[in-house]
Image (cartoon, rainbow, N blue to C red):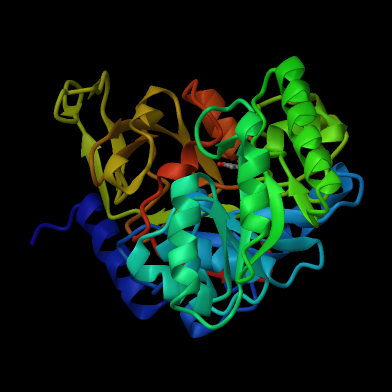
Length: 407
Ligand SMILES: *Cc1c(COP(=O)(O)O)cnc(C)c1O
């Protein structure tokens, strides 16, 4: 075999990976199951326990010391609901977990989470008994859902914990506030149903959100006059909790803030509070190749080389949840340098390394993370003119590794 520079680089990089020299430095307290296999050719996500606990504490400060009901719907915005749930279970500021899929509520409980879990949605009748056994708090959101829970009371011994889900104007789920009083009285009269709380969801326009709060508080007061006390009231997702102090009620109910992002990029609150990014999305370089002038990359020949230059392939694409818009300006951190993404396919993307080759197969790329302003969720969102809620798309199959802290 002719010994070219390229084959030398490829051979050596394979060799070093195999001998373990290329292992990521153990900068965290590591267990074997706590870090990706040295030679993994699949992307992975690292989570920082310390960052989550810091954020929970900071959110509670934002909410004047109130406890935090952590919204871990949509697989904790793609970052792993059982992993994040277990981390937050240790925080004294976290009152409990709220989410919208009954199967995930069961999975989080099974993963060992001890704090209260609120299902803010309907449930499959077949899972009713399991949910009660797992001590999941159910939502009552209509007369139909009340009937379903009444039927369930006949199948279980213990009292069923519920919260009243009130629609004050979002128009998505819940009992319309103006119809809720007689309905709530009916629920309160059920001996085997215990009302633990009541909640609504605020919209973003401030005037209307304040009107929604008025509607919610009037209903709660109406119930009080009927002798029905609501122990826990909540209304505020991240946006409202920062925008309207009156929305804090008994607990606040953020999602995105927990993961270290503000609900809008450049929110004025960024000047008052520091959240820590909680995750890194990483993958190894699986191919390094040279383009000659005129060679192109991608199905649509999205990128064409104007001179001889090197490219790298990373095994992550839009089917994994990595935004396909990344080819319009996103950067990736590799060996302490930023490289431009020039192509995103379903399972792969390409980086432009340039005329010099400073990366090899097996090197670890960070696609999103706290390590550089251009690859934080906000930096990434800015670079592709997108939104910082984007990580919500990450596929469940991407493995998660929980670290005590990022270095
Ligand atoms: C998603 C959601 C939240 C959290 O929203 P963030 O904007 O991520 O804070 C809170 N409450 C309900 C009902 C939700 O659906």
